[in-house]
Length: 187
Image (tube, rainbow, N blue to C red; front, side, top):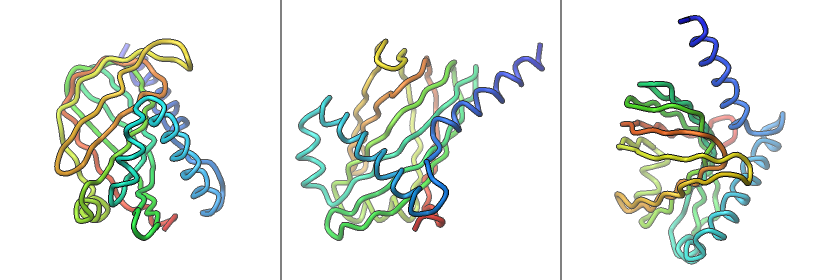
């Protein structure tokens, strides 16, 4: 029985990696893939919450991440990629992310995160240090266009954070830590 659980975790890990892998072989192709993901996520966010368009335009900058997550009983882990856009300079900083958590949870979830920075120094600190810890609870069931999902909004430390579930099935209540860092290959 423990071997079956291990195989399940390995299979789910490959599923998540597949969901959160940027397309392309060269750095330029990968950058284009990240920007395409960003545009797609922003289109979905603007459709769900039209007021966010003006918030993003008025902000010093914003970030968009694609993240996959596996929750298995008392642990969770995930990873993804994204980009921070400095609205003043127009500069894109490509980043990676990883997360881990403890607490009750079961399922697989593919989701997007949009972070709106309300102060330039908060955006710069995020790029340089990029660490976030927080409690998290959600329930979602969505596959393609079927099912339902919770699009969460949170404000902290002069950032507004939106999470949009793309697909997956999960039930979780966890304390998670997420680490964001600059992707040296793409910058």
